[in-house]
Image (cartoon, rainbow, N blue to C red):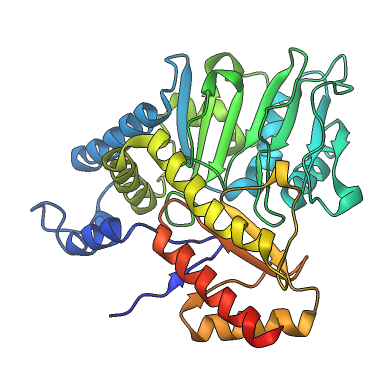
Length: 360
């Protein structure tokens, strides 16, 4: 069996060790005679799977005791609504718009109150992160919202914004567990797992306990209340059981790899291999300002749409899959999440070098 190098932005590459272990347990999980896919979420065996996953996750991120971990469904898009429904106490929220998903969250929040775009990088096609050291934060803002890593455009906040005392809420879908993070700096941080942690269908939220209240906007559905999930251990209804099980295996894999400090080191090394090539290339052009570059999603173009398409096609034929940029921006994008080996990035750079020589 030959596996391709999968540079998809999500659903994305998973560690081979995790996939093999899951395959071995598919028909019979540890002698119980059934798959985790078939297991009741109310069973003791599944509760053990769930509890161990949460424990490993908390350990990886060194999550303080006054934060709850929630395993939910609905993707980041449902979070775009849940956040204002639960947190817009004054009816005002500030958004930093640095890409498509922050923009969608911002537009969604307008349905529930006054949403202000207090900074944006739309003027340069979201190719940089704006200076957020002295923002015009609204006096009565309930929170300041960011999308920390912008998957489509390949940008990343290197420094968290100065919220001037307001609660910070962050979507970390495409950089979750790629590096250490200080959870105590956030009131709520969440991410879809399909980019860097597990299969599509799970959202993990980390919420400070004082943010969990009955005081939500009128009409907020039961399933859209964070308190519902917190009070019921993420099992008010049937959770995405198999997805959480795979996430748990990825948490174990990360711990075995040396934790998030080690993953950050490896991810920076991988990204530098690709960025160093792009910076000296005469054909490929990186899209993002150097001080805003993501180490998870690397975007670039040739400047010629036909040549871009030729590159994507030839790369796929050579075993480098899903390099086409998002439909809204075109070009190319290499997503090099935790599970992408450095050898995959090096092989891609070798292919790009040869393509450049053949097409200069």
